[in-house]
View (cartoon, rainbow, N blue to C red):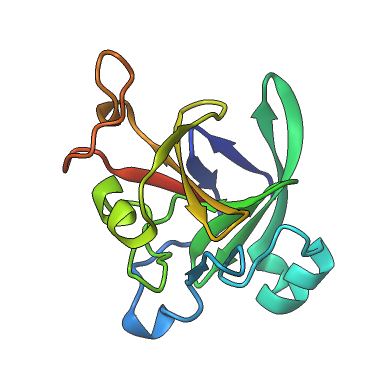
Length: 167
């Protein structure tokens, strides 16, 4: 089954999406220190993921990077999706949360409260904000245009919402 990823939104036929319940919390964890989402890490193989989540929940697909196709793996965890890229894992599904209860849909201000000051980052297809975790680890989030003023300075108000998490 083919899946595509466009502007941070997942479009796929055949996998139902449902609201997360409190019992999902462990399975839907964004673990910043381990650099994993639902225990999926960038170095996991497709066969490892299929054993862990079931073959029907792990789909190879492609995304466009600067006009060139790049392979990705879409993983469904209890109907919620994340993506394993060649150099990171990401999700724009608000069911996935950090231990602090933050995820897509949370405000940038809440992320700054939990992870410290944000700095403007670089990324294809959107606005990215970086958080330094420890000495060398980094958490990156994608935000919308509402997070920047006319001079492209980062705004930290309630309108600045995190759209995607990248580890």
